[in-house]
Length: 299
Image 1 (cartoon, helix red, strand yellow):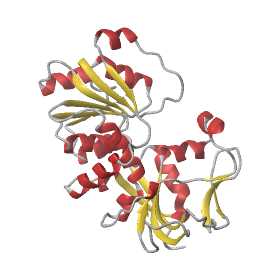
Image 2: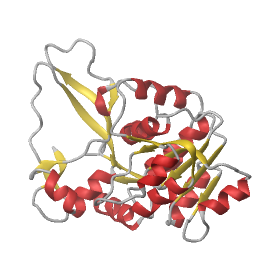
Image 3: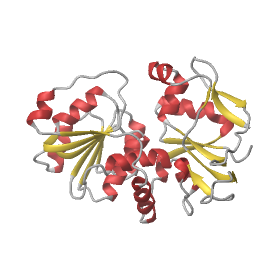
C-alpha cells in the first residue's frame, strides 16, 4: 500500500509502498480515504530539533484521517466493515469526510477552548493557525462575548475573520491594549487560549489578562521561554497545559457543535491528491494555508 514514510533522519518525506498491516484479534483494518497534514507532520518533514529527538526512523507518519473499516479482528464486536471512522476509532456517521479527516486537530481546539467557561467572557487567542482559528470559532459558538485572535500572518488573520472572530489583529501593527480600548473592555481578557508556542505572544497574553484570568496552553514552544512570574502571581492567573483530547467528552462536544451549526469547513483551504503531498507541505510551511487535506481514495 502507499504511505508517506520518514525513511531517513533528514528533511523530507517519501511516498513508498509499504506492507499492509496484519489484523490482530483486537484490531480493525481501515482503508484511509482522506488525511490532514498536521503541524506535527510539518515538524517531522522539516526534521527540526524536536522531531530529531522524538521521532524514531523509519516511521510511517500520519494520524489525522477518515476512512472505511474493511476488516475486523475476531474479538471486535462493536465495529463492522463498511463503517466510516475517524482518528481514535470513533464512528463519525453523517459528518462530512473532509471535516472527519481533521477531527484530531478539531478535538485539540475544542479541548482547549472549553477548558474554562467562555459563556459571556472575553477570549484572547494567540496564534491563528488552523487549530487556533477553530478554537476561536468554538469559543464564539459557545457564547463568548468578544473573541480576539492575534498572528503576524495576513492570510491566516483573514481566514480567522471569515470564521467569525470579533477582531483578528497583527500585534506588530496594533497592540492588544488598543484592541481592548476599541471594544470598550475595561479589565482585560477573562480567558486566554495560547496556540502559537511563541514566547512574545504568550507574554503579550499574560500582560492583557484580567485579574483572576484563566489560560489554556496548547502551543508547543520550540525552546524554553521565560515569563514574568510576578504577573502570574499578582494577577492570580491560572495556567493549564492542554494535550490531545478528553476522551470521550471532547468528541461528544465536537459532534454536537457540528450538528448545531458550527461550520469549520472554511479552515480547510487546500484539498490535494496524495501524490501532491510535497505541495501540501510547501503551502503549510509558507503559511499560506489553513488545514491541508490529502485524498487517498484514488489509489
